[in-house]
Length: 389
View 1 (tube, helix red, strand yellow):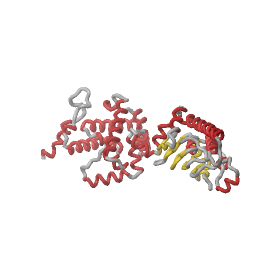
View 2: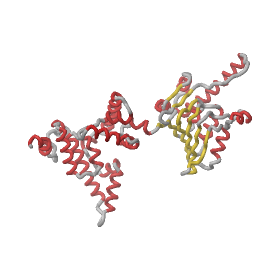
View 3: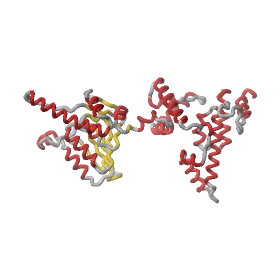
View 4: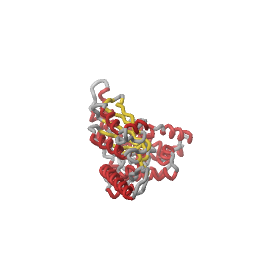
């Protein structure tokens, strides 16, 4: 029975797609045994890859309980020595010698729910053996173990003592996070890392890809127009967490964002936005501005002037949001391109509707008191207009 399949990708013949989903066959077993068991030796695996010709990339998906040690080591060295970039990915379980094949990857990733299992080498012994025979078998197994430890240490960066201590624990199962901590894996599926990211944008994109934004909107709609959802609520709904787990994740996420801001003192307080910083942080926005400028009929406007105007708009929105305490509106108003005056009116309306007088403050002014350019009377008038009516 074949334990592997190998073929070139339809969209790229120089990219091989390999699947190992059964026990790994032996090069040392007589052909009649392989024929009887329906197994393919490792040399046929290597020949099948070579038949594809020159390759730029090889992706190996692994779901195997292990198999013949010598064959696994041979495949490891073949893939390590190949000129193509090798990506190994555990899709179910990589156990025993299959973990050595996993180590051949330039990148080594774990699918959601996948595991790897390590242990000492073992031998199946049948027949009558004396003490000398058993001691010889034990010495040989120790040599096999030493060769596996050498491969693990070369790949993971762990010491031989650390790897030996792991193997001494017997059958040890590692999930994606543990495999990455040990250095066996270099990466995990995107959705495993999204919630731990300090950058909220990849998290939001991940939610959109999984259709969770629609569920969030539906839940908010059912709670009424004035309903709000915290970061913890979003995490709990999107990832099926308990309220306690969601609160812990949200707190950790907030700590990471605060740490990032503190690493750049003054970046939030000064609101200093230059054309260069806008280009570096939002190249898509700058590109869209320039593209829109070029598409306009008549003389093309000065792109730098357009960027300067956008900088003024963004700065005004940031100041208004910080002054009224409505920082949750920042991304929405900046991204949708709302004009400065319209955005300011919207921010003041939201602040007034909240009914929280303490949300309007001047703590962002280093001198204290009212900051020039902010119409505080306008804010208070909007906040009190229902009472005045």
